Length: 208
Image (cartoon, rainbow, N blue to C red; front, side, top):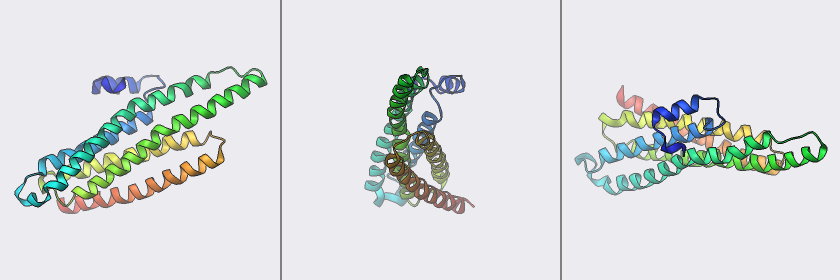
């Protein structure tokens, strides 16, 4: 499992000439780190005198952040698991028409499967961005920079997951499926980036 590797080993295997891990797994990992920063801020802020009335809110943020982080970390391996069959499908023989038809059938199935992981990364990353929006006003100034760092990680993860959705959709022939997935992905991307930018700008103003 990729997630059992050390940071150094993961970076090395990501740099290697291997089909996995790739951009999809890296996107999920970046988003997991962005989510972790939100939970760290909540853990440092809970119980502080200034935010004593926000204890339940902090506890809820920690709970939801932990769940999202685990989902995103799991998507690092899931992305590799979904892409592997697709990489094998590309190598299928296509000399005869029968082979071409079989290859195309397998490819279409594998492409939809490969698209599922970055779509889940998009959804979870969007939800994690919303956590940063919630915590920005109930965290102390000396740790608010980590809210900005976390939301920038998540913005990068959002953009990156979107690219991985697109590259799979571009080869899928099921027009209804493509339209539905694109609409979902574009909505998450647009709203997520807007919120991430608002959170980041507010952090900058607090620190300036």
